[in-house]
Image 1 (tube, rainbow, N blue to C red):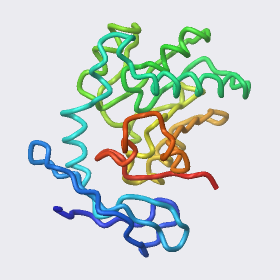
Image 2 (image 1 turned 180 degrees about the horizontal axis):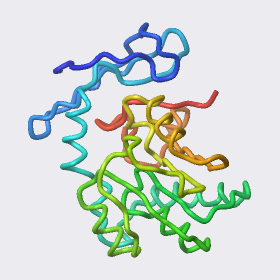
Image 3 (image 1 turned 90 degrees about the vertical axis):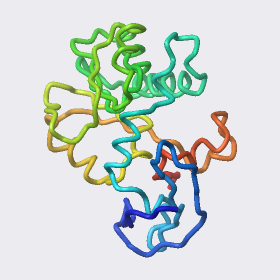
Amino acid sequence: MNLKQKRKCPICFSDKFELIYANNFCSLDNLDLSYYVCNCLHCGFVSANYIPEFVIYEEYYSRYSKYDIYDSEDKIPQIDQEIANLTLDFIRSNGILFRCVYDIGCSIGLLLSKLKANYDLFRCEGIDPAPHSKTIAKELFGLDIKTGFFDGSDRLDDYDLIIASSVLEHVIDVSKFINNISINVREGTFLLLVVPSLNDFPVTQGEWLGELSLEHINFFNEF
């Protein structure tokens, strides 16, 4: 394992960890994304430590994605459909009102397409680093999304709903990510975060051990 970067706990910033598991991966085009799964001894949060530098992840996400290969709606995995539908139901049941939505890490735009079909939206936009997401989102759903990472440089004050679904488990600096959103939105904007639950990993209907993939470095649980 090529160890690159020691992290502090993304939640409480402690640097005291207990090793749970060494997650070793084969190198992908000389990109080693192996890491240690660790438990924070202060707050109990589980995360990946001794991870590659961000430039390695940036290179990986700019080259590859298993989410932007679905060139037709019938190829989109059932688990992705369920997450999008549950998110839509949550928005409805909580009476969240919005006209302009921005989806960070929107993949091929599945959730955006469902919001567009169910709400009278003025703006419906998103961003994703996957290399082909922009093209597929346009072809499948008629959506205009951007290719890239959200780094806080984009102004978000035109939107009244910001979504980051299945994103925080990929983010190296969670606090910085949230802060980059908060400083760029107007008062009253809704922020909707969706993450996999560590409590449900044993019963997930997704890919086997998928939550311990080379991309996931934060493991959220109920508290």
